Amino acid sequence: MEFSQSITELITSRSSWRSYKSQTLEPELHSQIIDYINRQTQGPLGHTTRFQLIEKDDPLRIDNASFGTYGFIKNARNFIAGAVKKGTRHWEDYGYNLEKIILKMTDLNLGTCWLGGTFKRSEFGPLLKVGTKEVIPAITPVGNGTKNRAIRDRVIRWGAKSRTRRPWEILFFDGSFSLPLSVSNAGKFAKALEMVRLAPSASNRQPWRIVRHGGTFHFYLQRTPNYSGFTKSKDLQRVDMGIAMCHFDLTVREAGIVGGWIESEPKLDLLELAEYIISWEEYK
Image (cartoon, rainbow, N blue to C red):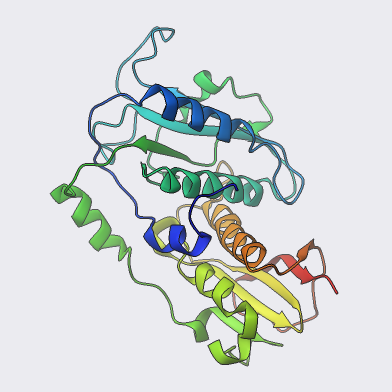
């Protein structure tokens, strides 16, 4: 089994940690992390991802100065960082795979925190040997979180309203964007959609919108106006879509529902700033 706990347990228990105990990882745990991240090489939409466990005090590093996280992370000695080659949907594939890694770290009782716009790519790029056609969409610290959250951590969580999620009628629709999908009408897919609703996102914007057509679920990105996470060098809301895809995919698999990702954009009247990403279809 890939996880020792159920996906729903991991998703609901996962929390962002920004303050860590200043201690090294135990050798066995270190090996487990390396083994797992080395196997997350293929995204569901076809892009190759590669991840690396970067240690602050690695003796092979010439400069062991603090990694640049703009003060958002305290005392972390280990980070999981990765790169992906630019393509059609590379942001989504990277988000999917890194969220899967983060859920595995949760399964190992380790703290993590999505960092998309609050780390210095220039410091991690050389360590990852990033190619000219690659990008580093996001990273995460990994380690043992402090028992109690630091005041700064609590303030950041409060500012981002980390535990607040949009209601179903804003996120999920039945046949068109004019008809919200209720929990009762979602049937066997209700749990998977609820896990999407609980997914983390940059600044907690929750940009995913899903329209159901029978056994097909069409994923859309509704962009946040003037959001700073959308630039030529990074598109954090498309990374968020990958996170949502990960939660949906892993949950339906655990439920024994068989299906896969397809490109099948329906002709719908779209919400403002909405764009089609991908669809998931149940196999008959």
